Length: 578
Image (cartoon, rainbow, N blue to C red; front, side, top):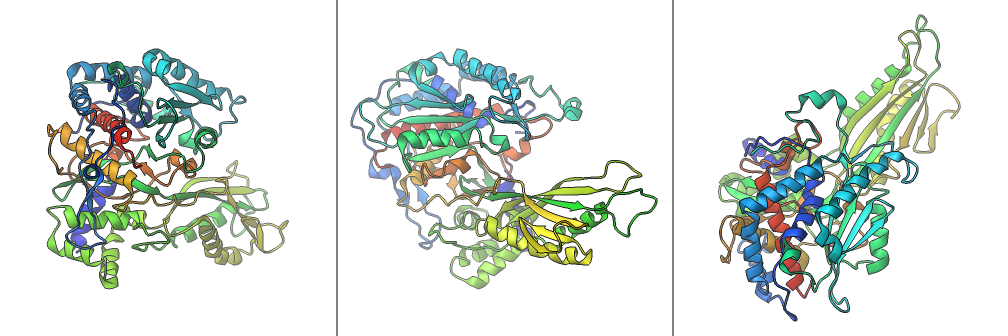
């Protein structure tokens, strides 16, 4: 069975184009604004409804706890509008216009940095002002039709309101304006300069100006540094206006789809891992290096870091945890086994039997944990990312420290992680006779004595794993999203009428954190998904250089993503039961 684990892992890490440019904000902000500027045709007739068939699911013929698939969901009241716009998005004229707008947007650096101070005090936030000006001049119809509110100066909320009293919860599309900074020493390694916008290779305009279901666009400006000044403030504004659980569903960036075992598999993230940054600080007596102690502060720190890596977190595959919704990684395996046409029979059998058999579940866990990528998805991970100590070659270090980043699995918590880390390091602290303080609790020794070890939370309390968005056949937001993915996949490949679609939609786990961490109060239905085609053999947009040299996006995949946002806006507008 081990031979199959690599193929499974490829799904979670998802054309070989030559475009090379920076696009971190593209997947949300630029796409949604382009949709608003392009997907536009006749005004909607009143009193439209979504038929039961449009949000129905295909019955599961294998077992009740398997992976039932939603039916294809297409706009019915706006069928001609949708078909016309979908075709227009693939036209050369639209392609050239969209690429031009994106190129000019990429040329405006909007970097955020870990050490940025509050808005109004740190002048580096002013980098977003030219970008706001660009949006206003580039999308005049958006700004004359939608209501824009600036939150905490640089956060943007666009509200596309319904005519008359609001009777339907809005749908919210989240994105962020900021990008990670470019390491100066790597600029020469880029095929084209990172902010060149190099490329080698409209609903409002058409009269769709008054949706029945409100649409909210929420664009933070510090997602890359956890969103405490951007999305956090946007969430307060939106909750203050629409109330707790006042939004029907939220879509933010995430992984897309790719071919797995001969079948395209889409994995919208129904949760995301928690996160926690722990600092280890060793303080020791200084002095001249000609008379060193048996172990310097750096030596002690090194022993502590070795202890951490020698004790990785145990990864366990679990079907359910608290919520009746299956845990995402387990659910993804079930969907692949049930629907992917080329899964080897022995692997398919193990995965499907794991739904009922604990022995089969353990066998599947054994397969998964042999692969580092898959293992990282089902458990808590730890990564030592920063180490500093010492000031001069002939001076004993008085202060040495390191930062360990954790991504917390769905079945764990910040509290459990802190307790476990404190226990793991206790034996090393005793061996070196350290005064030991773990997260404010003096474990042993005198707090004022040296050498000492202190464990500190440097992540503002950390982030718990996100709640699971419900995915049952009666949870209509997930069914609408799934049916939309199917419709867009088929339409982009020329099928506007078929009742079925080749693509399979499987609940997935977002391995990184997004601005949705601040939006939990707005709705239970939060999905992290970008309709981007990673290609065959488990490719993904992670292979497009995200956060590193030669970051790029294939324009064809980007255009299909625009089709996705267009279709979802129209489908949500016709749905009366979200």
